[in-house]
Picture (cartoon, rainbow, N blue to C red):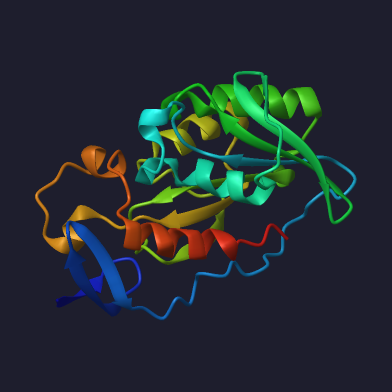
Length: 213
């Protein structure tokens, strides 16, 4: 067991390593429940809720696929997904709003292709785009929200920015960074690694508390 200062949160966190699965034993979880933000949403227009990830069974439960995991949970186990515009989608009415959940099937680096096509097809304004994705600069078990800003090296976000612009809402789910644990691992390998069972439990806790509005 050891303590370290989480770079993104500027707090001390205690972690323990169990069979290669780092588990946070203490964290304030102050950002786990997404706080409502003031955004100029157009309530009479559809909402596009996009979870980022890579298609294929080999990528299931990897850190980079936490966006897919989130929209699967938000849409519900009984959702019927269909193929359209290089993505899997499901349409629902939630709280009086028309919502299209999206899992791009273009692979991460080209996510913007599917997002741009679906926004044009459903006439979704940028204010009604919500993208859920992994973030290495946020500790596991925490989640933050932002509107606009840079991609921070996330290729899926970079692709979406290039196709539709930056001023959309992002829900960033923390997956941690190998440097937090002193691991000499390439970040590209880290994001494609799978969550261990304890980390997966924390991720599910975060996803269960996501609020879209």
